[in-house]
Image 1: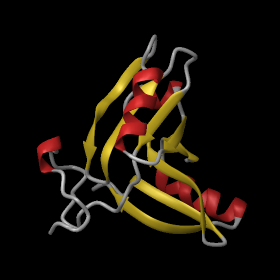
Image 2: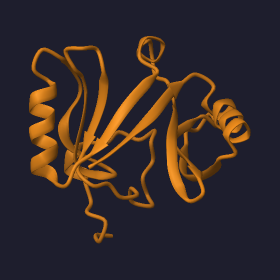
Image 3: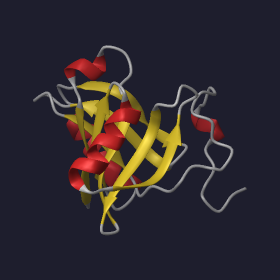
Image 4: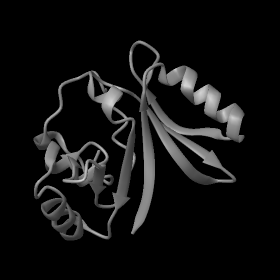
Length: 145
């Protein structure tokens, strides 16, 4: 199991540059939105991922700016964790495939902690467009073209 964190901020492009300078980080894999903000960015120190920074969406970014991400061994473990975390909580993204995971979900648990629960992830297909509509039927395993 691996736990990391993601910052949901306004002006994510400025935030990435700021945190790179403050902590001596390097920008790794990233996807930008059409407006130049970050749909996803990974920041590394000495080859190890330290944090993700993304552009906050809507009002949720003001209330919850830090999201804990947990990568579990497989889809069964991710589904079990999601089932327990959602009890008394609020589902943000129902469990299912995403362009970068066969099984993932977002939930705010009964204590107010925002979680991203996932089975092992991979980079999305090269044709992934964050502004295009997407649904679970479009999921491609990493070895599919």
